[in-house]
Amino acid sequence: MHHFHGSIEVVCGPMFSGKTEELIRRVKRAQIAKQRVQIFKPAIDVRYDVEDVVSHSSQAIKSEPVENAVEILLKLKDSTRVVAIDEVQFFDDAIITVVSKLAARGYRIICAGLDLDSRAIPFGPMPTLLAMADEVMKIHAICTVCGAPATRSQRLVASKELVVIGESDAYEARCRGHFQADDAEEQGHLPLDAEIRPFTTQFSN
Image 1: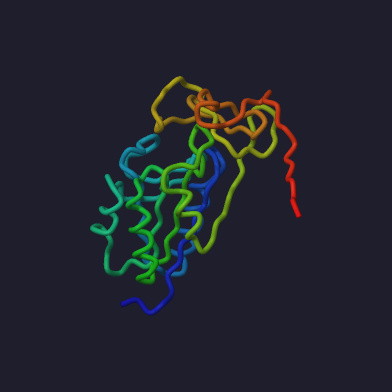
Image 2: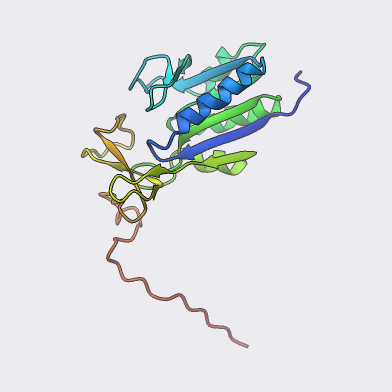
């Protein structure tokens, strides 16, 4: 039984915003405090390394790839006090149960991931994780078109798949104004030139 309070921290934002760097920073501070940390990432993320969590700026830290969320519970060591999970958006909804259970048992959970997918729609389990988190840090990238704060990940390659693992050859960070999703109208998003009527409310006595 752990005799301290658990917590859930979520670091989110678009690609190239520094989410993994922030996760690594928090992990290293926990290690300086002599807390036992385990870092996990989804096994499908092999962009830079099969095992290490690696940021776009080449910062790296040793992690344990897992095929699913339940595997995190199976690999957890008794001495662990801090659990860090990178690219958390790639897990299914079971990650919500896993994170909740661990926090209830007294673990500090640090999650990093994309809050929006390439259609600018909330990504997988992220909405629930953000709502249940004790702390949320939303980081902006820089729009490659205008230099404004970027909150979206613009996919540059044609694909109907929701998950396409890629780097700067496949994605760019974009602001709201310069982001365009191929299927925006299908997903209920208004096209940029759509007419928006004023909102009016009528009250009756």
